[in-house]
Amino acid sequence: MMLLALGLSFSAFTALSLAMEKHQLDLHGKQAAPVSRRRQWSGLGWVLLGAAFGLSVVDHGWAMGPVLWLGTMTIAGLLLAFGLYPWKPRWIAPLALALPALGLVAALV
Figure 1: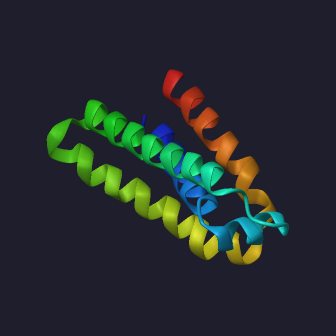
Figure 2: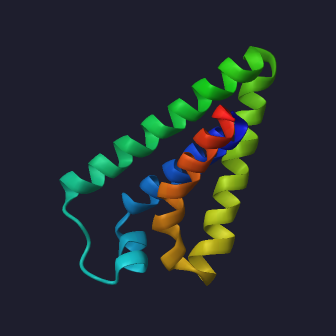
């Protein structure tokens, strides 16, 4: 379950970064999306963070769930901010789609 929470956190931070004009230009190199689209990205990011929090609490309870959720957010944020944006920005969108799917497969196995 924690791999799924990590994948959801990574996708959430990707969606939240796409809600920012600067990061959209970094990833797409075109003009920024309209404000309505950026609000959708922002909403999706917060929903995914909430889902990751819920999974962490369901999996490990209220004592350790929030702590592990903060850990997954830290790992996902560091990977995105210091690993992929500076070095491999083209990998961000495919990983944002693939990591939750891989986490779901790992949770089911």
